[in-house]
Image (cartoon, rainbow, N blue to C red; front, side):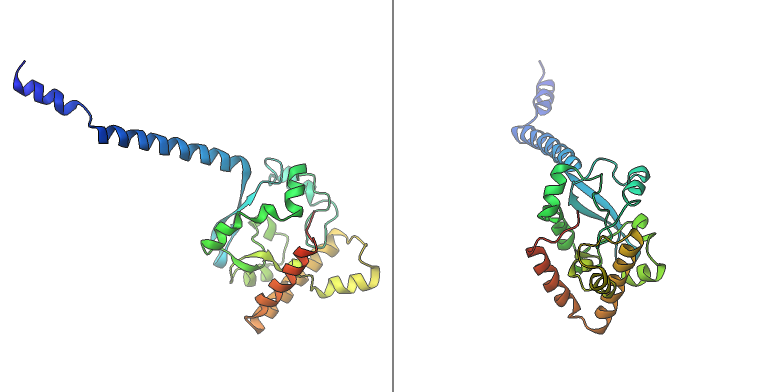
Length: 221
C-alpha cells in the first residue's frame, strides 16, 4: 500500500474531537426536540397584540382543552354569563387541573419570560388577541396598545365605577349579565387609561390593589 493511500485513509478517520462534537450536536438536538414537545403539551402560547399593535406571544401554563380558541369553543364559552372580569362563568374549556392552577395563579408564571424580555409590564391591560379586542370599542384598543400589556390585569384591582354602582344596588352575590360584565370591564380599562395619563405612579397603586386581591384569593373561574 502506497504512502499516499495510507495518508488518505488516516485523514478519513474522524478525530475524537469530531466524534464528540457530532455526539454533542445530536444530543442537544434531541434535547431541544424533547423540550419543544413538552412545552407544546404544557405551555399555551397566546398570540396577542402588543405595544403599538406589534404581535407578541404570551406564555401560560395550559389550563384549557386543546383548540380552546377555536370559534366553536370560544363562542360557546362567551355566550353565557361572564364574571366581573369579563371572563366566562363556569368556562367549559377549563380542565379540572387547570381550575386548580388558576385559583393559585400558577398558570400565569410563564409570563415571567415575557416580562423579562420586555414584551409586557408588571401592571396594565391584559394581553389580548385580535379576536378578544373585537369585543371592545376601537378607541379603547387604540389607546391601550400605546403601552405594553400587563402581567397583572387592571381589572383585578376592583376599582370600576360601574361595578361599585352595581354592588351598591344589587349586592356582591349578583351575577351580572354578559352585557353588564363587559360594560364594567370596559369601564375598568377606561379608568386605568385615564389614571395612567394623570400620573405614572398609577401602576404602583393598581399593583398594590391587585396584590392584596390575590392574597385574598380573588380570581376568575
